[in-house]
Length: 70
Ligand SMILES: [Zn+2]
Image 1 (cartoon, rainbow, N blue to C red):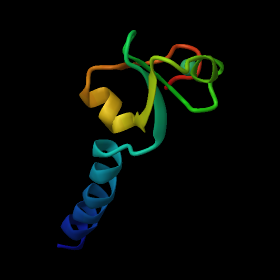
Image 2 (image 1 turned 180 degrees about the vertical axis):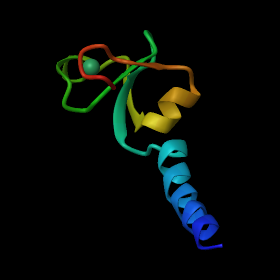
Image 3 (image 1 turned 120 degrees about the vertical axis):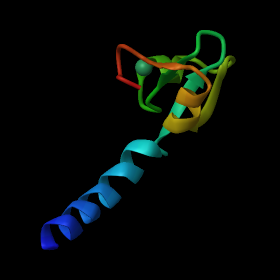
């Protein structure tokens, strides 16, 4: 019984973290690549970039930048 409770607690903690990554990213709406705000490419991209969250960007089909990892 204790073991099951322990497992439930672990699952409860792990799932929300994986499902909702609300860390801020900068997404290029032309190339559909998202960057960390501190990324060199995010700083250079002003016209086609919007600030969003990693979760939103992935939901829109964007992929992570190879330089900063998104
Ligand atoms: Zn980047």
